[in-house]
Structures are given as C-alpha cells and as structure tokens.
Length: 485
Ligand code: UDX
Ligand code: UDX
Ligand code: ADP
Image (tube, rainbow, N blue to C red; front, top):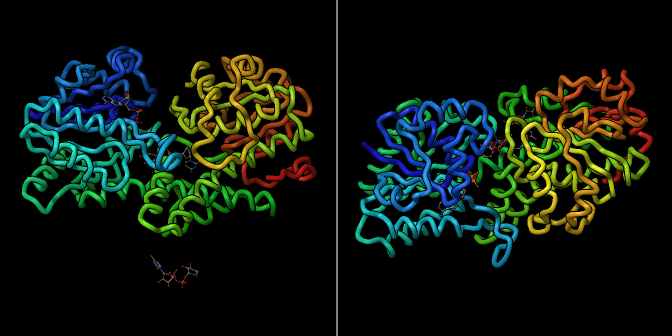
C-alpha cells in the first residue's frame, strides 16, 4: 500500500487529498498541519472551510483511508509521496517585498522532510511557487538528507474555490513536471500520473519538465486575471459611452478563439492566487532582466485596483459626494460566491474606501463571520501589495471599527435605514431578495450599487432605486454626477 502525506491542510491540501482518498481506496492518505485548530476542524462535523460537496467526500473517506493529524514528523517520515501544500504569501519585508513569494514555510517544510525521512520519497510541489523552486528544494534535500533519495515533482493545483470538488473530480488537465531525463525522475512522474489515472482520462494528464510545470501555473493565473482586467477596463468605457458590458462580453466571447467563460465584469478580482501570482511573475521577470514583460503584467493588477477605486468613487459621487455618517449596506464579503474565503477580496478595499469617507458600513455575507470581517478591516496589508489608489486610510482603531462597522444577520437587516446597498459578492441569494421590502426600509433616495451584475436593473429602477451596475448604461442620476476615478 502506498502512503501519501500532505503537508498543509488548507484550501488546496484538504480538498485535493479528500478526492485522492475517495478515488484510491487502496492508498492511505494523511493530511498534516502544524495548526491544531485546523486539524481539529477537519476531524469535526464542521470542516474548517466551506466548499460545496466537500463534506460528503470527507465523510465517505475519513476513518477509512483518509485522516488528519498534527503528528507531522511521523506521517511525513514514512510516506512514499509527500505533497507540500503550505502557504506561500507575498513577502512583506526585505528583498522583493510586496512582490516576491515568501518561501519560508516551504523551506522549513523541505528541511523537515530531510530531517524526519525514514525512506525514499517523492516530494510534490502543490502550492504555487516561483519558477525554479524545485531546484532549490532539491538542493536542500540533497545537502540535508540522511542517505535517502528524493525525487521532486511539480504538480500545481488548478482548482477554483467554490467549485473545488467538481474541479478535482473532473479537471481540465492534471499537470506533472519532473526530471523525465533520468530513470528515477521518469518513474516518479509515472507513479504520480498513475494515481490520477484512476479517475482522470489519460489525455488530460500532461507531463512536462519541472520549470514548464511551475511556470504554467503562474501563466494560467495571469491569463485568467488578465481576462478580468480586460473586461473590467472595457466596462469603464461602456459606462462612458452607453454600451452594455454584458452585451459586449457576450459578443466578444462568441468568438471560439476567445471563448465565453471568465468574462464577467466585476468590482475586481480577489482570492489568494491572482494578485500574488502576478506579483510573483512580475518579480521573476525583473530578476531575469525583462522589465517590459514585468510592466505588461503589472498593468493587470493596476486595472484591478482602478476598478475597485472606481466603484468607491461612483458610490461617493452619486450620493452628493459624501457618505459621512450615512449607513451603507454591503452584501457579500467573500471574494466570490460559494466560499467563506476573504483573502484579497475586493470587499476589503471597497469597505476601506467607504470607511475612509466616514461611512457607517453594515455587512452581510452568508459565510463570513463578524470576527473575520473585523480582522480583515483592521489589517493594513494593502500598503505592501501595490501603490495606493484608494483613499489613504490609517489603520482603523478598535473603537473606530466598532463605531463604523456592523455585521448583520441578513440582507434586510443590513439594508434597514441604509442610504445605499453595495453588492460585492455574487451569492445566488442576492438575486432573489425582496428588493421592494428593502427599498421601503431605506432612506431616500435609495441607491443600489451592483458590483457583480446580479440584479435586474430595470426592475429595481421601477421600484424606485437609483441603480448602478458595472459596465451598464448609466441612469440619468448617475450621469449628472460623474465619478472621477
Ligand atoms: C483561481 C483559478 O481559477 C484557479 O485555477 C487557481 O488554481 C487558483 O486561482 P480562485 O481564486 O479560487 O481560482 O477563483 P476564481 O474563480 O478564479 O475567481 C477569482 C476572482 O476573479 C474572484 O474574485 C472572482 O469573483 C473574479 N472573477 C472571476 C471575475 O471578476 N469575473 C469573472 O469572469 C471570473
Ligand atoms: C483579424 C481577426 O482574426 C479577424 O477576426 C478580424 O476580422 C480581422 O483581424 P487577420 O488579421 O486577417 O484577422 O488574421 P489573424 O488570423 O487574426 O492574425 C493576425 C496576426 O496575428 C497574424 O500576423 C498572425 O500571424 C498573428 N497570430 C495569430 C499570432 O502571432 N499568433 C496566434 O496565435 C494567432
Ligand atoms: P492554500 O490556499 O494554498 O491551501 P492555506 O493557507 O489555506 O493555503 O493552507 C496552508 C496550510 O499549511 C496552513 O493550514 C498552515 O498551517 C500549513 N502549514 C504551513 N507551514 C507548515 C509546516 N511547516 N508544516 C505543516 N503545516 C504547515
């Protein structure tokens, strides 16, 4: 029996290992993490992450061939295949701060593998890392190992949150990079490919050299984010000209060379990957002496920042250029629907922008807790990541947070007595709200700012709302109050 151990029980490691365990009942799969609350969560009835379909998969396998443990050394020590799925945030200080990937967790995981091994191992990079990380890991293992042999593979994960189980069960492709030029490297690639081949068609399993696999992941995320920045850039032009971004995106996407997916205009992309991976790509380009390429990709992030600040400016300018003391309901805080994850969510920047203008914000999200919202809004990580486009906002004190931010139990409570509703996540339930009821409880004029194009604009205007929807023709009220981005 092969034993797989995954270091890191996060958004990637947890669901990925659960699906491997489901599809390979003869393989023992152990997920380890240094965080005992995380592991306790995975062993409980309430899993630490919200992901449709995940509960079912975990329930089927846990106690059979899937387990979660804090005994990192023991399980890593005797595993045949070790996946490394630890966090690789953007560096916040030192060389490459604000751009380069922080590989501290990765390096310590690699050193730990070398320290505790009692057998040969295949070490698999799962977390997204800069190109040539595998080479560095090989060196650490070779110089610190105790006579065991290690094969490094790069097997980047392409799952998206909210659809993780579907993506894992039926992936567009599985990518495995390794040293196919050596017999041992080739055998390692084949062994891992054999695991996925249990449920993934052979033609979707791609093998490449190590660096192609590492770079493909960064490039794929950069291309996806670029599509959103492209459509968001056009959305600004739509508002200025009277074109409708939904119609434009539909027409553009009908071209099979372009394709229709991933063309929804929005208040901006978020999530733990896109910005981090592009910054990483930018840094790598700079390091290799390719400043033109670096600035090409940096622009994708600049447009994303612009889109968020444009939204805030639209809200403020529409409401007579001031939101001071006005209650603003924020519907949705997660970076997309069907997840409770708030990493890099555009809602943080939009809320900070509104708070900077002294609004009183009432937030409702079906999956994000009040504590999480408070943590996110108290943080000042924006400084590092990119130049500021939003209102400069000093770190909010606990009392300011308490005075200016409330978390509501539902959308109606959030909107009660509010001047405006901002929709920042495309949760399905926001499409079916009773907007008439909401309107009646709000101050007048009542505004809806739809950052995800989920509402029926005509219907809401009929109710009496002043409606702004990204990239849609503006109503007269908004035309009279142009937003300066
Ligand atoms: C992404 C990649 O899709 C995935 O392949 C990779 O492994 C990790 O990063 P994820 O961040 O989970 O996945 O979600 P994704 O669906 O890509 O959405 C990212 C952001 O883009 C979200 O904020 C989403 O709302 C936004 N988005 C997406 C748009 O604004 N418009 C779109 O058309 C699509
Ligand atoms: C283009 C559009 O495709 C077409 O829809 C529009 O109506 C007119 O402009 P055209 O310029 O005739 O058509 O050719 P196209 O096949 O798009 O190629 C344009 C250029 O891009 C060529 O120089 C081609 O060699 C280059 N190209 C295309 C690449 O370098 N790489 C590619 O993957 C595709
Ligand atoms: P991702 O979205 O990439 O899965 P997460 O931050 O959700 O990232 O998960 C990474 C996990 O890795 C965290 O739960 C963290 O505690 C864990 N981790 C980081 N370093 C180590 C380590 N050296 N050993 C074990 N677990 C680790």
